Every structure is written in structure tokens, then in C-alpha cells.
Length: 458
Image (cartoon, rainbow, N blue to C red):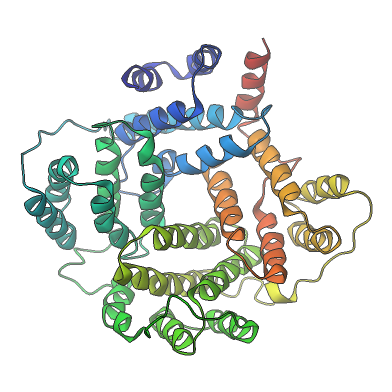
């Protein structure tokens, strides 16, 4: 692993594709590649001052892992070539702008309780230096479950950097099984640094900023969850009412709406699905970077909800997601406000399924709403979402041009798998297709992919 990381870090950009092909022919495992590239990115691209921009070279890696494992075998390595090209570009940018690389830092032997206490105190103070030292000391004496019982709630603490903190935590949680003992430190340090980004605010520990108010208000609201709240029932009327509420409710009231639904006996699964639907509607209205993060953030928070073992944390994650969706709705504003996911009309399609899917993806990106209507029409005629997702991943591997292309599609498809209601499932997938990579997309990265295909065939 060390030699693979070193190769990725130190090989000149233009030579990396040929080196990667050589490694593939020598039997390189895809999981080893993902692990090494994640470590290289964490060591060479910092989440300061932005948990975004260059730092997507770290945050995109779980999506790359998913795409690599799910595309057709002929496309399987193409996302890897895109990802390593992206890393080399971001590494060069970091070097030219700041010269930053993650510096070694000595550890101090601590007991488990002392290490845990120091990490929590540093995160509460928003103290980067203290938190960086604390994670180095605590990681060797803590289990992964203990580490993430701390990191998960801090990932949901605020929406600064439009959800990238939650995305970073779930990205790390999902990838950490790839690293051997002692190798995860760069990724954990990178994650902790991301959690302490304050954007343009001062220290939230000593100030009162809008980004922190939902978290503070929800500390007491969690006590109003009813007994047995994890169960509950599905209710189509409640879904529709909650979706309408999310279109207008301010973030400081969104959590209260969640508690009211739980007290009426509505299941948390129904609430999560409605949050996904509300995020899907935003991408229909405004297929741009900010609404993309409504879906990817909801995905990250739901993943953390499913993997958290602490009930209070689970409650906070659900409340925070509702507040974040309300914030994203406010950020989108009145952009195509008349476009509503529950009013999307299916467009009748003719011909076989595969031809229709090709026609849908040829509509992108110019005719996004028509693509959504055609997708809904196709699902009504042939309820085969797997065929649509397979084709979308194929063109993602060929034409994907940005980290958000990968992050959004994999998040949306994973959220789609959570639906229990068939009608909402179809509408959600149709809405998500509007941000898929089209078959005729003009990709700046296509040169990289074409070169990779030539090298693999040679």
C-alpha cells in the first residue's frame, strides 16, 4: 500500500495512466486502488479553507468505489482513470497555491477515556490544532465504533460548506475498512479538519451564528420523540403534507414538523423518504451544484442514521436533515417554483426499453424535464429501474466530468433503494435522472477516458 500511495503521489501527471495500466495488468485490485488514492488525496489536499473545491478529490472516493463495483466489466476501470486524473490536477493546484502536504505529527500515549475526552473537548471548542493532536492520540486506543460515535454527530452539526461535513464523515466511515492497521490516520485527520471549518464565521463556540442554531435548538427537541418512534406506519397523506410543508417551512421549524409526525405515529422511514423526495424536487427545479448537495447530504445523513448505534444521535440526524432540506429550499428560492415532483406527468414511450433509455439519456442535459417525464413513462410501462441505472452508470463512466456527477448519481441511486412506495420510488428516480450524465455530454475529461481505453486495449 505504501508503494502504491507513493506512486500516485510522485509519478508525473502525464505518466500516471500508463503506470495504472501496468498495475492493472499485474493484478491490481480495485479496492487497493481506491484505498491508495484516498490516502494520497488525504495527504496532499487539505479541507481548509474550503471543504470542497480541491477537497472533492477525497470526498468523491466512496462514489468512485461504488461506480467501479457496479458498472459493466468493460467500463470497470474507467472511473479509476478519471479519479486519478482529478487527484493529480487537485494535487498540482494545492502545490501551486499553498504547497501544503499533511505533516507528520508525533503521538502521545493516552488512555481511552482521556483520549476521548480530549477529542470531544477540542471539537466542541472548534480548536483545529488540539483536535488534530487528539485524533492522532485517540485513534490507536479506540475501536472504529467508538471513533465514529464521536465523528458522526459532529458531521451533522452545521450546514457550512453545503453538507460536505456529513459527506466527509460517511465517506470516511465507508472507506475505512480498506485501510490496514495504522494506515487510516491521514484520512481521520483530514476528516477532523473538515469538521472544524467555520466558513466566514468566527468561532461558533463563542458566537451565535445562524448555521449553528438548528443544532442547538434540536438538543432539547430530541426529548420530545415519542416512545417507540423507530417503528410507526406509512401514511400517503402524511407524505404529501410533509412534502408541502418542506417547500415553505423555515429551517428553525422543520425539526418541529418531524416531531409532530412521529407523535402522530408516522415512521421515520416515511420521513426520510419524503426528505429524499423534497431534495429530488429541488434538482428538477435547479439542476446545479447547491441542489445537488441537498440529495448527497440527505444520503450521508441517512447513512449515518443507519450506522449509528446511539439513539440520541439518530434523533439529531433526522432533525438536522429536515432543517438542512429547508435551508437548501431557501437557497434555491423561486427558481422554477411551479415544477413539482408530485405533479410530474409521465410521457408515453414506445419501442423497447433499451432504445427508450438511450433516448432519455440523449435528452440530457438540454431537455432535462422531458427526460424525467420519459423516465416516469418508461417505469410505468416497464418497471425496470436497474436497466435505467445501469445505462446511467455507463455514460457516467464515459462522460463524467465532475466529482458531483459521481457523488450525486450514487447518492440518488442509493436513496432510491430505500423506498417502499412504488409510485414515489418511480417519481424519485425520474427526478434524479435530470442530473445524470447524458450520452452526448461534452466532457472535458473525455480525453482522459479515451486515452485510458486505448491503453487498456493496447
